[in-house]
Amino acid sequence: MQKTDEQWREELSPEEYAVLRQAGTERAFTGAYTDTETKGVYSCKACHAKLFESDTKFHSGCGWPSFYQPISDTIEYIEDNTLGMKRVEVRCANCGSHLGHVFPDGYGTPTGDRYCINSISLTLEPADGADAS
Ligand SMILES: [Zn+2]
Image (cartoon, rainbow, N blue to C red; front, side):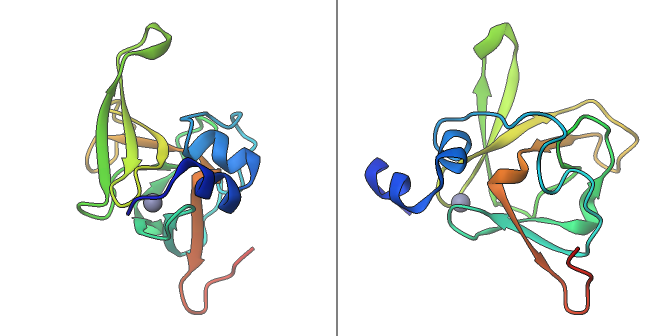
């Protein structure tokens, strides 16, 4: 999926644009989904591709929603050496929007990975019957 920068600016709020299209980071503990436990599927805010199942979300205490595994083939990985750190950026494979970073730091998850994702990059679609609060 290809959109021009102008189209993205029209479709996204300034806050969404800054994170999704300019690889910004929302402030820790400010996002809508940091501690959410609602069952459902998290999809890309920009293109609505399904990215993470709520079953793979866990409490890392880092201030952003954390997942240990994406839905297969939904994520693009890019080496990120900005800010003097060697990190792996994760983007939506469908539209190329920035989601966050993945860290191999364990937390006792089944994969040992922590996908640290901006809430503003995601939309939660609650499962049928799930409490949306
Ligand atoms: Zn997307």
